[in-house]
Length: 328
Image (cartoon, one colour):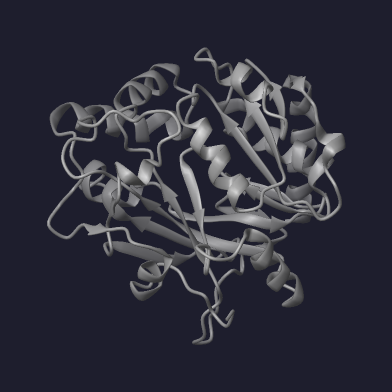
C-alpha cells in the first residue's frame, strides 16, 4: 500500500504538466482556510449557485481544473476573485478521471488544510449545516483527532420527466429536483482498503435494474485534513493511507457522517449524457453513460411511489442516511 501511494503521487506529479494556469490566486490562501478542489467540463449553468453554496458555508478558496470547456465555464471562473483556475485539453480518462490533477493541486496547495473535493453537481450536507459553517465541523473533527469525514452520495431527481423544467443559472437545483430514494441501498466492506462500498438508489433501480452490481458507488470521503503524503485511489471513494477510510464505527456506535446531494438529473442531463458517451472518457468504457443514454430515451423519469421529498439534514439522519454521531 505504501508503494501504491508513492506510485499515485508520482503519477500526479507527471500529470501536472498537463495543466496550464489561467488564474493562479493561491497567494491569497491563508493558514487554516478551507479549500475546495474540483474538475469540470461545460458546467457554466451550474457554477453561479455552486460557488455561492460553498462560499456561504465557509469555503475560502476554490482550486479548479477546467477540462476543455467550450460553454464559457473557463472564462466565468477566471473572473472570480476566490478561484484559482487551471485548464487542460488532456484526456480525462488517462488522468484517472481527473484524480491525478486534483491530487497534484492538493499536494502543492492543500497540505495542512481541510480540503473538500466535489463535483459541480454535488452539494455537501453535514450535521447542523443549516446553522453552522463547515468550519464548525472541521474544528470539532480537529478536537476529536479525526482526519477524514465520510458521506453518502444521494441522487436527487424531479417528479416527472427530468427534462420537463429548465434549470437556470443561479437557481437552487434542489427546487427542481427535491426527490430521492430513502431506501434501496446495499453496503459492503472493502476488505482491501477498509472503506464501505454503497450502491443503490435511483441509478441502480432504473439504469442498472438488471445488473445492480454494476451500479455506481455512492460512498465518498470528500472532506479530508490533507497531508502531502495522502492520495485518492478511486475518485473520492477511498484513500491511502487506509486509516483515512475508517469513517464509520464497527462496534455498534455511530460516527458523524454527511451526504452529497447529487443533482445530476436536471434538464441538462440528456445532452450531457450523449456528449460524454461520445467522448468515451469515463470509467469502464463509459458503461454508466451507455445505460443513461439508453434508458433516458425510453423513459426519462426517476420518481416512484417510494420517493421521498428532501426537507433537511435531520430528515436524512432519521432515515439513517447520515449521522451527527456524538457532535452536539
